[in-house]
Length: 194
Image (cartoon, rainbow, N blue to C red; front, side):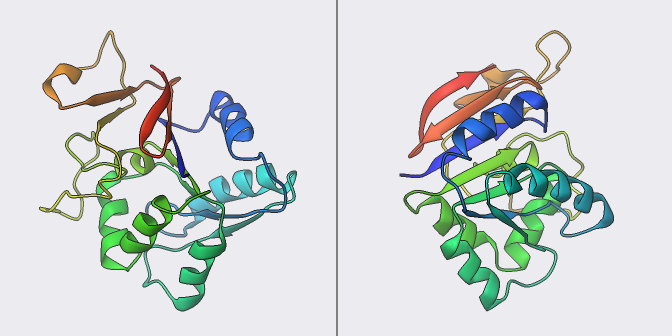
């Protein structure tokens, strides 16, 4: 049974949620995959997560999706209990995982029992197909078919009083405000806080 946890951004509320859903076992292997691959900026976020899971005895391995996946990384996908995909540019993230061989590994991971996927912003949006994102399509992608794991339109960073995006215009929209979250168990929505 796989679990998918989606939020708009990293926050204290998200940390508490992750601790209660992710850190239920000790000494696990986790993966961290930043949108643009490994960079100085992603190192800061990675180190925060690394310290967070270290208290649980977990090992967090950073994957560089800006380079072609290797056999060792494929093995990590098989062994890992969870995958953390933080925010960033949605289109760059999608381009990187498709172009460099991570796409099928992530899909397989999502369809494997006892795995947890944690998506923030761009990481949340790619669990479906991209139909709405505030990000600039920097790689000029025409094919916006993403992981297609969830049958929802993810609207990340939604602000009810000032947002120009109308959730009613999208099929099966799922709103993620900056304080909201959604938890799926085997593709079924089990908890949603806007």
